Image (cartoon, rainbow, N blue to C red; front, side):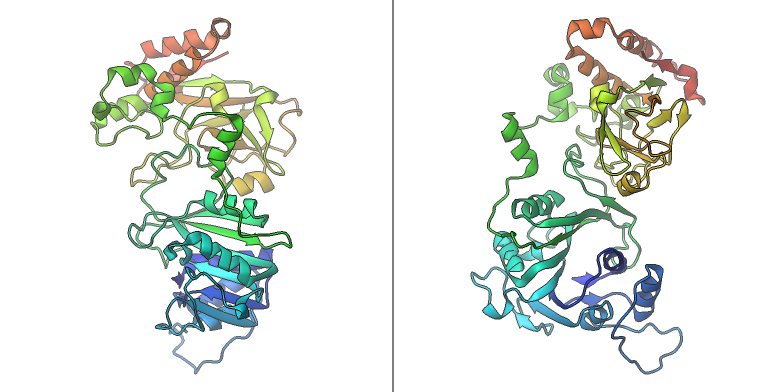
Length: 454
């Protein structure tokens, strides 16, 4: 439980977007891993004024000035700061076990903001913990939560998925302000800036399989208690609620969905990790290279307007499965400790490449200008001038490197189509021709094996 450099900068970003004040309650006594000099630096960087600066004896110019958690949050604009912990061994203002059945009446509807940096995952009765947090907040009070979602085995009872916060806030009529995935640099959890901040949207992790990568990941969530908010609604996880509403069975694994014949013929212990890391690890590198090394590039498109859906102010999204595209994406979901460089997919607008690729989804939605990202099975993108790609008269085409793994999945996708569909698509025949070239991949220029699909 500590205010680290990444948390400090995210707090300043939140303060700039949605200013705060009044009474703050902190779960647990927080160690402050930043100095007053760093606080002043990030305040200036994000254009935020500091208040209630404490006075210190003149230190050596290079000596960092350390703050307590109360001093820090009073500097950030709160008039009163109260800490709550299950024990008083660190000097908390209020001793309270969040597993307790009742919340003291003096804490009801008292606070304008509640900050949790790594506490809720230690509460065994997490539903009761949420209920107490709700009771402590005033109407229009803000929950600011920072909790671990990947790694940290045995450091807590739970690792909290972002869908927990989204589904709980939605079921209980909170106003969700933002949910973000926070990726830390390996070995620098408290001191280095974040390696990546990703806006979470429901469904964006549905294809993540084994996990993200070898780094520590946290989830930051911000929600506001409204006049109609409750804490009693027990949500069904969004993914399964959607399946239940549609009357569908639970989702199958990637192998079950795309390789039924492969599953029948190959023992489970010897399966190759096709596609996006859903198979068994530890197999010979030669097999993995043969399945995932590109041997040609295929052009797909133009993308029909019916496959393009709006996603934010300037953003749009394409479900690549509808086009038969199966490639590793910007989402690091292969389960290996090395962070993947990102998707090799390119997007063209009237034959000209768009970019930057691998862009943050918030940038795509709010700024646009051709930014795009291949994330899971979806392509998030914007047009070069922020016009609607469904009606601006331009052709949007994908350039996708072909691998054996992606080609097998493409064939399985085609096999599931009606015969009339396959017969009228030249892509099927051209894809088969790519297999004949698999043994003679061009050494330097992958465009030498380019095959265009109708």
